[in-house]
Length: 275
Length: 164
Image 1 (cartoon, rainbow over the protein chains, first blue to last red):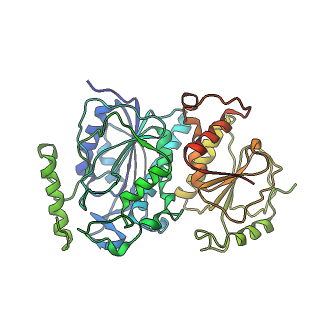
Image 2: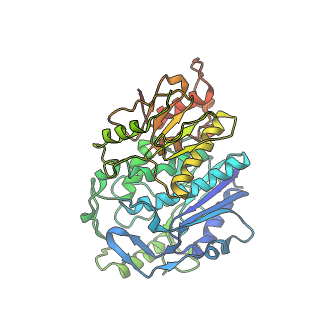
Image 3: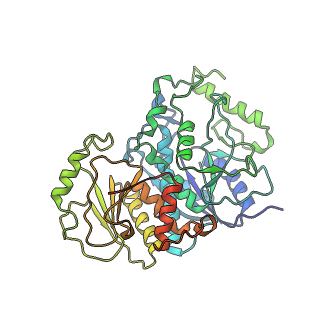
């Protein structure tokens, strides 16, 4: 029997990409842990399968429409959504802050709904719309102020250094409000110590002092003195981005097989990819 | 007393030239957030003045923080600094250097007027959600609860605290 988290807000913030394929897994995961789920969606007006300014644009860009977003929410509470033109946002240093910008938009939509209706969500889950996240446990514990719970991501460029998965966060409502300010970390010039764009090539083992979005995130969480909920290491065995080559029935595959799909896709996109 | 003469803002912006973030522009965009309903003289140089009709001080903070974030992230405007005025008679004596991750109390602390960057106000503005009493004993000082919560969060979130 699962422990229910109470009223939960799910903020889907990020590039649209494989949302139609990922939506079923995300609904399953979230609704396993709560009976009262409100959804918010913040994404760009266009999408592509890979977007790193440092590496240039790869893949064909396609438009995202209102209907693309609302289609999958039949019978569910999609409270609000916003499509943002990426050309209108500030020129951030790294890809990480574009994602963080959408997290801010999602957070604003959630706060507006809370304030107008005079309630506070028990838990808030912020995740990207293109993520595969299978259920790992029957029960999870509620996060308190400045606690967060995350899910392990498959990390293509090695795992030998401290890092922070950036695909999935569960917090309480106030902590999400704090987490959503991480885009400002760029303006504080905190990113300079991580920025070394020339050394970021696919397959290259990044070193301390080298550009890495997961270091930036870890730095932010340490700066705000947030701590990971410690009673259970992870509430999912895996969180990974669904690429276009992934099969539809991911639950039938092992973690290792899913990682291999991810490698396969990366090899087809980047000639220098070594894994 | 004039709240903030226009010439003061010009002087202030010159003082900030050595701060990397602000040196890109010749002036700063400053938003004024009013914690009480009082009149503000026009042409003070503020980019935007925010008010809230809510009576609960904690909800008023949240309302102002939401308005500020919508102004920046939904409407696409720029705000470099936020001046928060609790009373009409405040002199915002700004320091010549400023950290964007700090909060600067002006006048006397207990009036609750301060200067900070917008992301700091965004964090503090949602203090009505914080479970304060569970984690903190009452220290016995007489400030209203939202001021106590604010000081708790300033410390807890690692925000720098200055009195000017």
